[in-house]
Length: 137
DNA sequence: GCCAACGTTGGC
DNA sequence: GCCAACGTTGGC
Image (cartoon, rainbow, N blue to C red; front, top):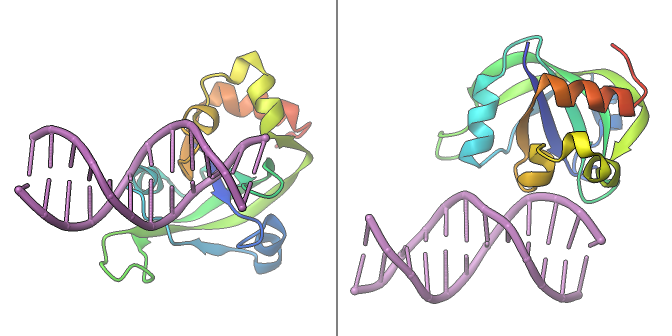
């Protein structure tokens, strides 16, 4: 199973909103690299839910419940989206600062490619982040 | 196909 | 609100 990290600005769409909604369309991605990551997602894959701009931390874990399909909000019809549902909130949110300070995570895309909104997370990094979040699945 | 101009993301 | 990083656009 592959692991991912998805960013959202909490004032646009927060973790709490996802919990409230039960599931959501991850629409609006307009970057090819991010879209390629969306395409690679399989039902059942897990993704960290990261709050950018405000909070600036990983707050929860979501799962993919529907694979890549056309995003109706894209007038050109080029981009797609997936559907995600909440799995669980991290016991302890993991702030970007702590991620940057941990020598085990220096290679993570969150640090190296800070603007990429949908990114893969290696199993090794996934486990480190779960541990930092004091959360088990 | 190059590259300058411009727009967007996102941390601080 | 600023600015660095970086993706996209468009003229040539």
